[in-house]
Image 1 (tube, one colour):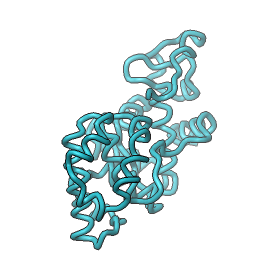
Image 2 (image 1 turned 90 degrees about the horizontal axis):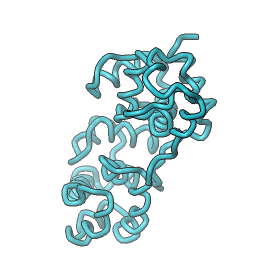
Image 3 (image 1 turned 30 degrees about the horizontal axis):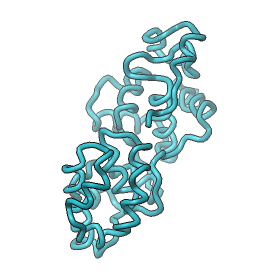
Image 4 (image 1 turned 60 degrees about the vertical axis):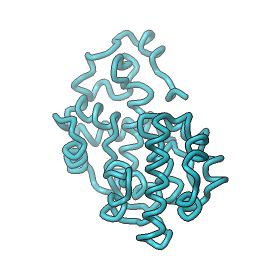
Length: 223
């Protein structure tokens, strides 16, 4: 078993419940929630989306929403003015260009305002079952620490990590790595002494080595 495969297996044992932590009921809700999650947390997004989707449940409704009303609902997620403009504009585009149906291909999704490859791959993997690598900040950081890539460019990381694993593993792999980054392999002080993949990681000397102290660094994602 290669080192990447062994790490994936160990993360699977450590995080058997790994999944997308954004709440959604359909592709449109996931698309909006993913756009809102930029520079915010999934928990914070989940705290406001029930009200958002109660008032504007589909692209048609959101495309016709009053900007000030949407801003008031999503303000807790930060950058709410830019995000309001993005989700209203992309809703209009879905109505105008895709007959009100959230598109299910990478090529179509990235034509929507505020939607890049990262967001598109989240939606494709979770809502449409289309495998993709989601190069968020955690995946980029950990892929470098694991020695899978030597770049912080999302497109380079996406290609390099994708080449190491079969497509059917991509979505779950990303969830496992992201969960590990949020809970253990932190940017500033990784909990190496309590890390389930320390024996496989070439960067296991970066963080706290004492197991007891390291265990105190393990945390759930912040609210």
